[in-house]
Amino acid sequence: MLKEMNKRYVIFTKNLCRKTNTVMNSRISKLRFGVIIYLLLSLLSLPLGYYRNWILSKFCFEAVGNYALVILVSNIVTTFLLFGGQNVYATFLPKISRRSDKFSFIFSSSLISATLLIAFCMLLLMFPTLITSLLSKDIDSKHINIILFFIMSFGLGQLLSYSMIGLQEYGVSAFLNNSQLFVICTVLTINMFLFADYFIANSFSFLLWLIGGVWLINSLGCIYIIRRKLITRFKLNLPAGYWKQAIFSHLGTIQTFFYNYIDQLLIFSFLGKVELAKYFLTIQLAKLVSFLTLRLSAVFQSSFATILPQGNKEQQENLYEKIAKHCSFLSFCISSFLVLFGYEVLILFGKSMKYEHTFLFLLVFRYFFGCLGNVHSMIIVANEKNESFFIANTIVVIIQVTVSIILIKPLGIMGVIIAHIASCLVGQILLAVIIRKQCNINFYKPMKFISMVLLLAAIYGFTFWKPNLLGKGIIFLISVFFTLFFLQIKIKEIIQSKK
View: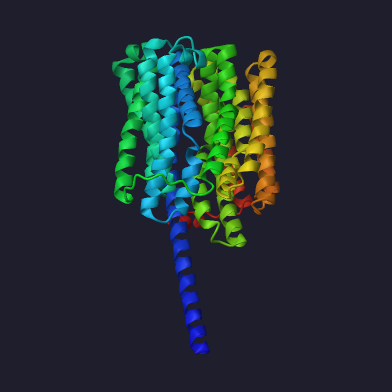
């Protein structure tokens, strides 16, 4: 009898292990598919991002400044009004097994944010001059209806796109995140030939209507997918730990807003819209360095939240090392290209932009040094180490805001960039300590990463010799192949991983 029970237990254990491995392999395959989709669409959006900024500059620099203001409005919405942000959806939805409970969670979490959106819109209706105080004196009460439409449609669309990440619909999420760029490029191209004067005169309101309309359509598509994929159940359902996670995540997004946009707010306030436009074009180029890791970080967080509780430490280390290795390589390729060809790219936006080349290199250096920060942040959030993450972000934001305010008057844009670099260096060190001490994951080969930073500085040194385009191309190819060898990345492995 006892032997028979032991035999059944062994069989049950083997079947359980087999099913667990099958589930793990399925989720890893889904992660790989999501990464590929994100990568393909992100690579497609890279030239479109250049093109969008270029065509805006061809209208006028004020149009670029107005687009920067629209981006500020959108980030105010996602930062202050969407409670918990993307993190709560990417963390909790993968852990919920029942389809009806998933729907209830999306409904409950979205209801909180929808309440904040409506409350803010009512506040703007009661005090229309508030938006003027927040942004610009050029924005008056006639824009209030357009801004209200934008806030509600953009906010709703963002909420529902967050749920796509949590539901591991990575392809849909990738399409949603890039749809705005595709539509803007198409419409601006048409306007360039047919309605240029109208767009120049009404660029701010035009962009609000256009982007708001895109996200309204996106939200309808998300609702259709959610209704098809899940069982509709309008019931309040917030899992244990939700409020703690959401509050820290929300505070974290507020910190991130000040960290990422205090520079633009200060430049706009102290130096004006034209200088904001030039800085916006320069920093948008530099942000391409971390563009892929930023887009992929949501996939990583959702997948880590699912995989980490089931995998052992070795599996976690291997997954992190592969992600870090390929992200640092891709970021280095973009960084070295911008350092070498930054001058040629900048003058595409106007001859006055050639004076921004030094600023571009410093910003590229800042974003390359922080290219793994998005990956580290998502790992920390997935492990629910929110207190440490919040403290680290608080320190970084204090440094960023304080140094920016001190240096912007005497040094102008250079002072803001110095604040960027200082806060980034401190932030990356703090994140590395957290993932090592609290998540038990070793930082990815620090000496190799520092070597790539030094190589990037050496490449910038070559530009002082003013090599021609052929010489720059040769330097770029040599640096890329050297980094492939240095990081021990095999092209064959990359191709096989995409399959």
